[in-house]
Length: 78
Image (cartoon, rainbow, N blue to C red; front, side, top):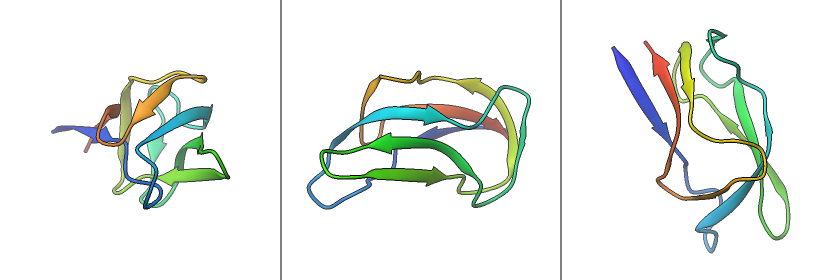
């Protein structure tokens, strides 16, 4: 089953972040809690972990993208 992961809320007053690094790659087997990508807010960098284990099927973001909370980021096969 495929599941599209959405950008989680990373702070109380933050609705949009910039993708600074993508650690996941297509075909990679991901474990729950493993860092998928890193985002920047106005004040800090935040690592975004996988909510569950799976295999990365598609990456819907790129470094430098502005991404809003709730936007699709990755597709995992579980």
